[in-house]
Image (cartoon, rainbow, N blue to C red; front, side, top):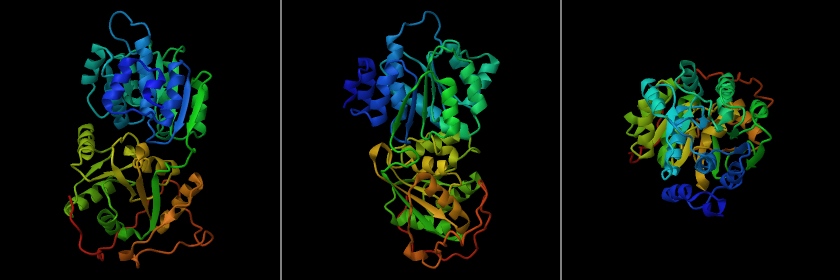
Length: 416
């Protein structure tokens, strides 16, 4: 199938063609006709499968087909996302695909001053892409009205609920007209997401692409059982020997992300960190630098597990094993996108073994254990389950400090 066969208007098709795309992904093939028909929709698909275009394209088409309101621009489409990075990504998609349409898009998110957003709202916007907290700030100040919203899209709904935005989302939904089209997209469909969908959607169509909970088939997964003190050396070794292109290294804390970034740069790697302590300008500069390959390594906390849409990420390295299976899925979904292949390697200490087993139980997939020759004496054998009876609490952190004397692998190769 091609985009020409999806009954999109010529102005929207021109935007798609200018972007270089000709073939819709499975979620786009399934969702676009439903949205064009005006039905509510629940779309469940892996990260990296093209969910953003699956709702942006038909929503632009419906705006073109509908009557043009007279007077100042009103917010006719509202997209709610969990993070500012994802808000900017969706806004960029609207501008790209809507290049040949008359509609104005405006991103609204925290971490930056309110004044530019006040000015943007006064000028008017047809489409607003917002994070929940900042959108509520504008609602409370009266600087935005959602009374004319025709379509409400909740993007990455599971992540929004995981981040504690459920009450904010319900307040936002209550501020929109009851007569509207509502779309909910999510990588997973656990209980709270289903309950939210049941309460705000009207006889929705349900589309699920791929097996729920299973990471993309295009991601090769591996786990290396290693002591805590050797993780940094193993990271260097993987960067030099595993045919790594652009790579995201995920850590559990922002302080560790900063420490690893400093070590990488000292050792000659081009690395940058992104986490909640960085300003919005710093985060955008880091992402742009990573996209343009000025940085080879992006070190991130889970705040970046959604909203990074960068081509050519060859590896995701979980420096710390995530303590929630959902976080694992979202992390490794940054590679192997758009049917490209990728590799995800998870460093696992003895204290993190239970997290690894929770991930395997959740996904129904046994992750291959790999050992690296230079670290033969620092890998450990996996005990039987009965021998490993103490499970760390969900959210617990490993506070073991690395030893001062490390044996390093062979001399490092050329870096950039």
